[in-house]
Length: 259
Ligand code: SF4
Image (cartoon, rainbow, N blue to C red; front, side, top):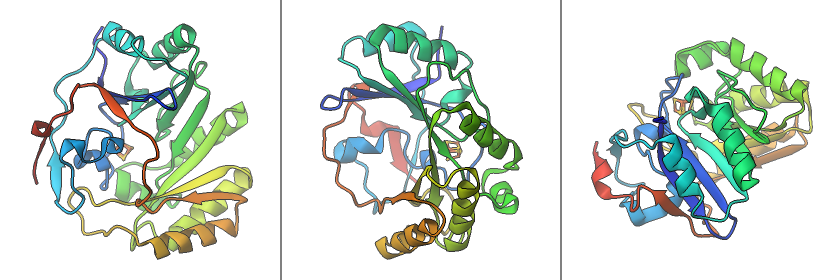
């Protein structure tokens, strides 16, 4: 059976693999996959340069279910992350996560936009990407209302799943005001939920700029008015461990073209 998995990475020191799925049910204006489809943790080995605007070519090679299991069996595994674009768009997500968990005794993490909730019985942790709580901004940014996403978030919380909520800070768009609204909204569910604020990286046809470290600090301080656990990245953090591509091997520059 063919999957929509086009990329697999592995970090030997943490025994963690990531499966990258292609395809999404939202259409975010700032989607990073417009600019890069392979893991940003692979650094410069794919010729990627933040200073040079490039548009990524969508992947053309996809793995079968058996190939995914075979590639994972080559390494020692403790954790598997399901990410990329949207892993929940794979119709057999529940089956695949169960097989992986059984065969490798892995802890499974799903990064999702929350629009569709797949079978999560073998998913141990969820990173929930909430784009905006103001429906007007959400519709403008993603093309859809956030009503079912918010309902799914509440449902997940009630289910007792280990949950982390993330949003992307975009100066002048999903800015301090909206970040505070997101934090306030999360605190209405549980003040102790971990909220991670990620910096926007320029992608797609828009004029938004990447936030400065100062802006990220301001966003953190505003979110901390409402929540006990807030973490923000500036995008300048150095990766402390090696990440390699298990598929394709090697990831090559021909997947990138000038935008
Ligand atoms: S939900 Fe994520 S993968 Fe999907 S379009 Fe938005 S940013 Fe891209």
